[in-house]
Amino acid sequence: MLLENYKINELNQESLQDHQRKFGLVASSVKNLDEVIQKLMDFQIAIPSWALGTGGTRFARFSGGGEPRSLEEKIEDVGLLHALNGSSGAISLHIPWDIPQNPKAIKALAAQYGLRFDAMNSNTFQDQPGQQHSYKFGSMQHTDKAVRKQAVEHNIDVINYGIELGSDSINVWLSDGSSFPGQLNFRKAFQRTLECLQEVYAALPDNWKLFVEYKAFEPNFYSMTVGDWGQSFNYATKLGPKAYTLVDLGHHLPGANIEQIVSLLLMEGKLGGFHFNDSKYGDDDLTVGSINPYQLFLIFNELIEGMNARGMNHATDLGWMIDASHNVKDPLEDLLQSVEAIKIAYAQALVVDANALEAARESNDVVQAQELLQEAYRTDVRPLVAEARLRAGAALQPFQAYRNLKVRDQLIKERGLKTVATGL
Ligand SMILES: [Mn+2]
Image (cartoon, rainbow, N blue to C red; front, side):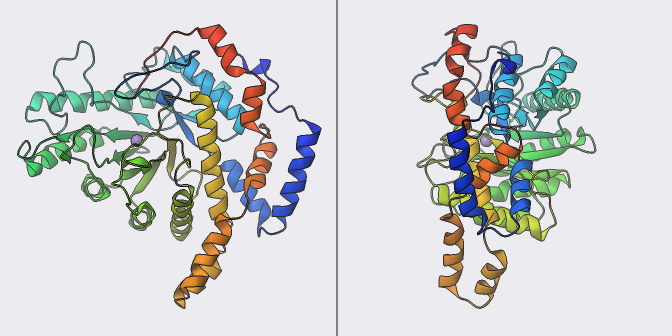
């Protein structure tokens, strides 16, 4: 699939005029308009390689066809998304699913699409063909030192692949834990895991970060050895300054106050990155903003407050990634929706009157504080996001452009209906 075949930013005069009218309406109410648009243009969200194919549930997988068959085709797909929305300028790879046979060529291909390599992801949650030891009872927590050694070596391999591609971070998500009371000595599991992470940490280049991702449950249903932000924070603190907590929105118990977690991690300088998705019950794969967009806005409000307090660059100082799986939607359409939802929440948080909010808080004016937040949330910021896209040379309406161009039909023609299991 060649991007040149698509006239992505071809503008329909009527849509453009409609956009200009709507943009004019919201623009007059936004302070520092150009700064807000620039921030929106700079904000890039990494697409995970495993979200480009059709995912499945525990019960079945229904392929939509045209899925990427190789790392090269995954990069092409992200390149197309980035051309459409101007905000998907990075890809997050997973080893061993995305082992680059020729890293130089892969790096060059990504650069051609304006993409960089975000965090590398290791995998010790499943056994690979030819692997010597099984992860059935965990990896870094395992009672057998040989299993733990294998897990450490795999993570170091992942770092080495990342170095070749120009990545600068590794995300470690462990499925380790226990499914039944009595199965595991929690203290030993923690200590073994920490020792393994210390070995991985020691292999990090100076400019690299290590993210410790937590998850409340699944695949283990009694305990997870990195089960919540407190445990992740504990590992990250003991590891050292290059280790951070990664927050995956779907990895909390229902009702968790994620925005408060984000605020405290930022305060401690230990928030490293994000996996965006949405969740209603216990899932972690739904389209960003599809269930609870207000929560997403509140999270961004804390992110901006905390990052500004620490003088951080919104676009570059944290890792922004999507982590989702699509079993009934076209993955590329879903990813366009997810990136749009993230940009909208970010834009809403950028238009919060932060000084007035802080004044309301300091004077305990609860009603005014809530009004200020909801005023921003209820502002239709979509024209601001669209304007940022236009200025970046991307499509005014990415989703409509994707459908008008009949991209999926084209991909099916090129790649066939063959199903490719690329991830979770
Ligand atoms: Mn995740």
